[in-house]
Amino acid sequence: MEIESFKNAFELGAQALRLIKQVKDLLPHSPQRDAAEKAIEDAEKAFRIAEAKAAQELGYNLCKCTWPPQIMLFAKNGNFKCPSCGHELDSSMISGS
Image (cartoon, rainbow, N blue to C red; front, top):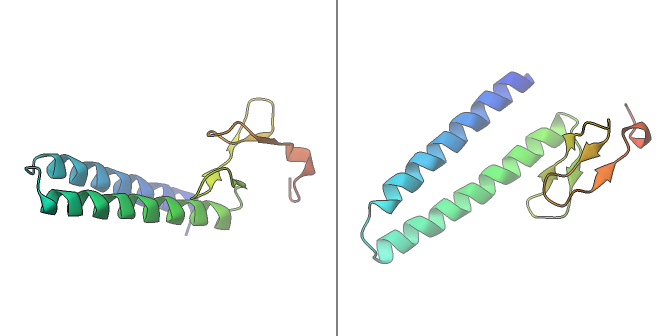
């Protein structure tokens, strides 16, 4: 599967989670709403794990500052940088670069 397909799938998943959250906010405060909030939190965590796993399969570096891991992004200086903690990896030190 190419990267565009992964990107589109994850964008659709994120959009679906946003819509589910909006619907949940319409529910009155109750045990059912609490259960819905917990299910949404679990779904978001599973989604982030799947996203990190897909990124790793595509050769992206992951930072382990959080769980699920953060996908490291390409920085202006040519290194890879964690958007969460700011940790950087020198791209010349990574095999395959």
